[in-house]
Image (cartoon, rainbow, N blue to C red; front, top):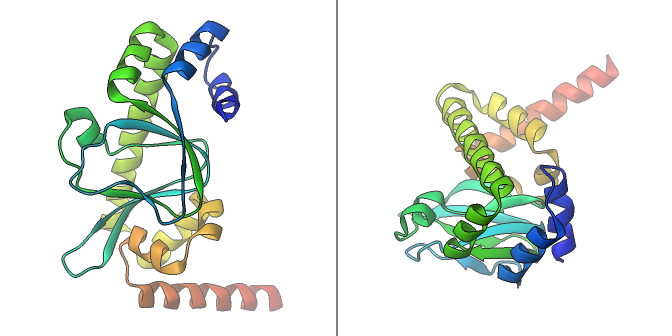
Length: 199
């Protein structure tokens, strides 16, 4: 399984065989079954997680039992609750598997050692933080200023593969709209596409 991570990292920078061997020696490989929790709200996020195959969801349960989905994490992506991981405090979110998912994990202590020993990994981690910050800012702006139609279009354009793999009510939760609203938006889009194809 680690060879998938090696292939992923080669696209971001050159790592020597010894560096990859070192990372591998500190890694834990795990299979997470569909609907199984990787992290439970109230627990401390102690691992940096790389998804080899499958799909994870980071979400929070509201008081009324409904869900707020923060992110979906597909293959070749990283999953971590940053506030909990960085400060070693209880997580406000859950992470579970929407499909049977294979992951590679490093503890915070081990990943810190890796970043100290391998400058390429530290630079890579810094880029990930910047990208995550930019994505968070864009998400905030979308929630503030986008219509339901614009949110839906943005999602299916930005995450076409995820859109095919998750149910509509989860897309609605991620976008912060009701399932009924998203169903209406989706039906209107289908009608428009049909009219355009006829015209």
